[in-house]
Image (cartoon, rainbow, N blue to C red; front, side, top):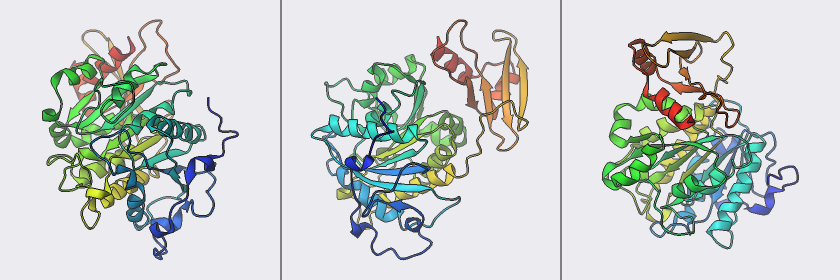
Length: 392
């Protein structure tokens, strides 16, 4: 039950230690343009975004120490320069641990659902990747289907026990009742870390998976995939160890720091995206300069920068769009495309199967110019096919 009208979020949080920010005097720094929980917690109503520190790593057996990551990320983030836009950003402090992992995730759910209901975007930092489950549960009472963007070298879909942990949380999301999951899109997985049967589970559900090599070769084509997500969960394990050593599961290959920032920029631009989590940073194994914390802080900065460049592109009946109707040789007989005059982004229209209505959902889905080109050659775009399949 969402109880935001009476919820005092202070009961869930502890303030940020002075040592994190006391020596930051630069008037142009990120810190000077946000409100943080020092003596009193800032009000969340009216804010655009709220930073939440997670101090729980009990869901992981292989990355103990991730509970200490939030403040180290803050130390780097607060020192960056203020970016574009009129910041309305608060830092609510660190979420108090529950008696167990389940209670910690329940607290994250309550806080995030309250923020989302009040149009405040949670930015979750620290803790382990299983907190994706708590982040996802925040959408349970919103009466809409949601799409999860998961960035990870691994695919955490093991069926290994009752408790939610860092290797099975996607499995728990898939089985969660009630089911309000429209899709999971997996970015940057590494083929040699995932068995084919596990990957086939998502493919049978018509969920999209993009291995690291494909993403790197076609990074701009990932923008429509990212633009279709309601929430993003970013596991730092997806970034190669030379750029992000602060993780006990770090891999020699992976995204570069620059590629990770590009993904975050796209995610920030996405008007649908209403929560984001950055998980698995472990300062106990970072280098002397805490390089990984600096990478994560920069990723968050780019996400925020994207957020303040949003263009509110949802009303496709306005004059800001070009509409293209492409005749097809077979079924479907036509496919409708939209192109924004402002951003030059593309969308395509996918009809519900006859008589099938789930929630009120806009079936104009993001696509690329490549999809439009395919249709003009008489080929039904893969994106149209997979979206239609999810609705049957």
